[in-house]
Structure formats: structure tokens, C-alpha cells
Length: 251
Image (cartoon, rainbow, N blue to C red; front, side):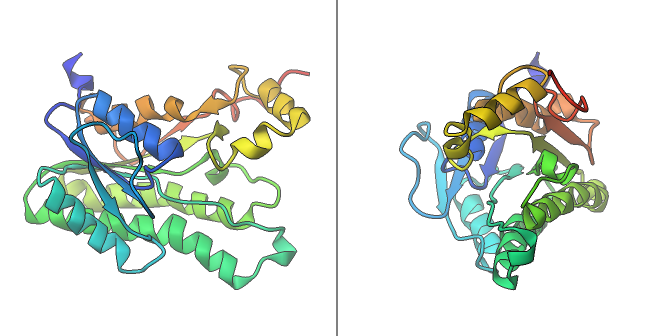
């Protein structure tokens, strides 16, 4: 269906040098969009031909505004944004220090907020409609052990999706969220692949019987950005294989 196509669209995907962000960027390209990748350091080797790249450390308060300016300079037709950049810096709650707390909130929450703001300002100035997807997590709904700062940040992104959808609706900018469950990425793979008992536990808890791959998040994001989701805003689409559906899982 044409409504699922991203032809004649251009997207910036933050945190797309690896993992979920990179899979999303490739998925948007495969759906027809021109894509600008983003990373903290060097650009990935496997970017599709014709793609752009912007570099920036989103822990820098000025980085979101500069990143958006650089992305529009490379791709003036930009009208789609995926805020995916984020990470995990947790320690047990009683050991948490303000530095780690601030690092988590600044990267996961503040940078997303001001990236959307900078993007929206450009879109409004150009009188252009657009669409945003904010990548949160099932941790935004359900707590996890030794994950207090991360869980708090992802819960904030769930509400950010809703409040920015309301703020930007008058400007014809849709804002939705995508909440991955347990996905194998460069961040999670070391413990997933080294702890058989924990992996088997999750494989029994997930209704589809497997841990997700980064590519599993790409189609959902492309859908939310596409004309097929043109009457959807302020919603968070959970992509977790059924992890959060049942209480106990297989015994």
C-alpha cells in the first residue's frame, strides 16, 4: 500500500551509529526515505548510498540545536525525526550518585526534548507538516531491578510523547512513541549471550519465544512515521514480542 511508503520524505535518526537506531535508519531508507544518521563519534561504515551523517555528543546542552541545524543543512527536505539516542548508566539505588543520575536524564530525556523542540521550530518556520517518534522502552511502564534512573528516564519519555503530541498538533506535527522490550543490541548482547539461565527465563516469558533483534523495531517506527498512521498521535507502540502481556510466562 502506498500509505505505508516513506517516498518523498527525509528523516533524522539520533543514535543511529549502531543498535536499534541503526536498524531503524536502515528500515526508513528501505521504506523510501532519505536518511540522516547521527552518532557521537565517527559515522557507521554501512550507511546506504546517499545518506547523510551528523556528529554530536547529546550530553552537550547545545548539541541538539546544532545537530538539527546540521541535519537540515544536509537534507533541506527533512520532515521526520526519530529520537533514539540514549544509554544506561545505572548502579543499585543506594549507590547512585548525582553524576550518574544527571548523565542518564540529560542524555535520555533532556536531549530528546530539545531535539524535538529544535526540529519543530524549523518545521514551523518552513510551514511544513512532520512526524516524530520518540523511542522509550517497556521500562517506561514496568520497573526493573537496579534500573531506577533508567526506568525513570524512560517513563519520562512516555509522558513526553503525549505532552509534545498535544503541543505540536496545532502545527500539524504528529508525535508518537515506540517502546522496545528486550532487544539484542551491542549494549545488551554481552549479558544476554553470557547468562543462559537469564536468557532462557526471558525466552519463556516472551510470548513469541525469542529475544528481539534491532530490526524488529524498524517496521513499527516506519509505520508510525508513514501516512498509514496519519490519524495517530500521542500513542506509544510497544514492540516486545508479548513480554509485558502475560504475568508469569511459560513454566
